[in-house]
Image (cartoon, rainbow, N blue to C red; front, top):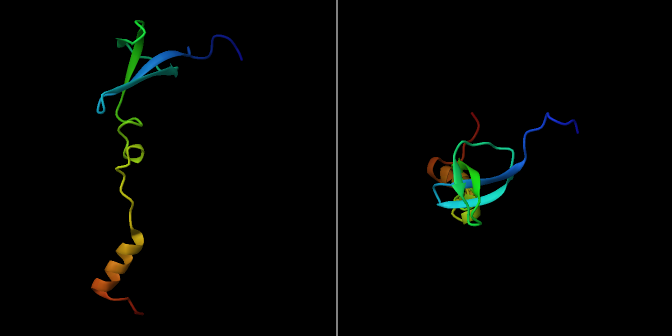
Length: 84
C-alpha cells in the first residue's frame, strides 16, 4: 500500500439515538463531536439512524408479506380472471 493516501483507521463510537445504544468499533469515519467512553477515553462519535438494536429484522418485529394469501383473497373477492 502506498503511504499517505489512505484515511486514518481508528476507534470510533457509533450511537443509535433511537434505541439509546452505542458501540465502539474501528472505522475511517470522522466527526467533530466526541464522547467519553466507558474506558475513560474520548472518541469521535457518529450518530446513526438505525442499528442492530433498533432494526425490525434483528428485533423480531419484522412483518412477513404473505403474497400467496393476498392472491387468494383477491381471487375470492373478484373471482378468477378468465380470458378477455
